[in-house]
Image 1: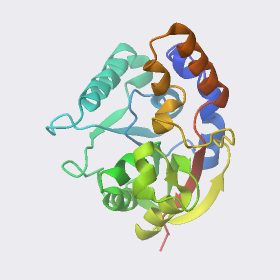
Image 2: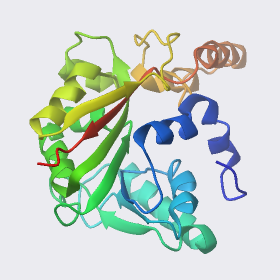
Image 3: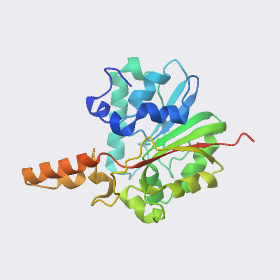
Image 4: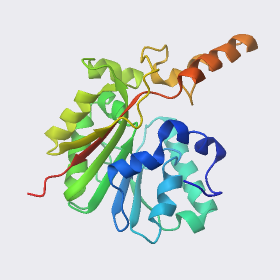
Length: 251
């Protein structure tokens, strides 16, 4: 979790994202082939790349920039990630990159080739785009028998309609479990390591009202109102999140 390559802003979020506890719960071990889905700007990449370097294989499935008409932020995040790699080859030289923008670019590699698939705070987007079932099916396809799918996701209240809550960034835990079940994976364990009972999950701007986005506060012009808004949402902290470990049956 240490190293000068980590951005200070990323390191400051460890108290919310609990990387050591999360990865220990997922069962990360030396010698694994680990695939992280949509690493964004590389928050977990800063941790996983040095941990897996010379001790296994770490692959990131980043946005496929050859797919047209995607949101602009995808192209920007992908280029930022590649720039991060090029600036620190002593950390990232062994990271493999797979282009992935389903449904147009939907393959994650060979069947039965991955020990662990990890996805952090992405499921709401797949549900909103209507591709969640095919995405989870692809996870199951590339996992080795006995392999692990680890999911961390903003958690909606149980009983919430996933199609509606996904637009706010939150998804009910049961919906994620059902997606994995349909893909042929079973829930092995769940953890509350990323839980936040202070998150009421009913914010204007959805999950993006909370740190680190603070979207509600960014729209305020008066400095005193903005400061009060930031203090309010920082007191809540980052979102309440489910942490789930699924496994692909051996037979």
